[in-house]
Image (cartoon, rainbow, N blue to C red; front, side, top):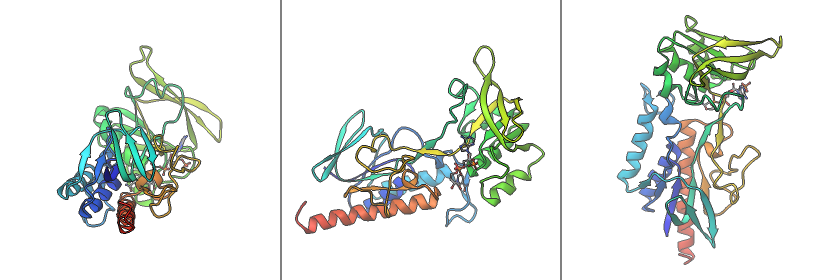
Length: 311
Ligand code: NAP
């Protein structure tokens, strides 16, 4: 029986691990098999304490090392189920079942897909949700980025370094991204342009189905449809919370985000942190902050139970 199991491998999970490890709760972190969002980010310039910015992967790696220094144990296992066992919990992965007194869910969110024809067929063959990972394949090529938020701006900046042309396809006439990110992108007009009021309709591939050659789009104001030639389509239209394994036991909202009150979920002993419960901020710093809150909640819960003689 573990005092605390943390599910997730991003900055909120590592922060919860640092706090619970320092509280001598010997946390087990089930970090899953896919990298967290910061691992796909370039420079993080708004995390306090790094005046020159810090690379996203470095930030998470350091946070993990910090947790391990205090004794946090990590396993790369994907959690498939969470169930109650009296006041405790059973966490299942394809390999094993774990018992825990408290659970911190910090599973983050995954890239949202458009659901248009061709998108799935050409995923990995020109359709991508990670420019930081794939931009180098687009040396002197054309790439389209879909979306108008900060993620789309980051994708465009990552692609700018390699591509001869980057086209942002956005469904409105205004970007959602922060002003600083907008400015950074829009001033690179030598290579980056924006197609405003434009909806993606279909990813077009070559006859052999091996690579992307275009994107069919529609202007929502004029209703005009056309195919824009491109070698790649990068999706940056937001994220979906990773709550499939928990939604039977923990309350979620209409979009699947875990409903929290300062890291508390509806279940005593289960806490949630990071993007899996954040419908508003989704920043590295707010993720870390909620990881801290969840850890302190878990620690207090265990202390109170001990004081009552229940453990
Ligand atoms: P987001 O802010 O929700 O933006 C998603 C974008 O995709 C919006 O522009 C949206 O259009 C568009 N979109 C959504 N569904 C679409 C669809 N079906 N078809 C076409 N377009 C669609 O998501 P995000 O950019 O991933 O950012 C999430 C959060 O992380 C934000 O708080 C952001 O500030 C933060 N973030 C920060 C950084 C940074 O600081 N460096 C980097 C990345 C993300 P509408 O605008 O019309 O809704």
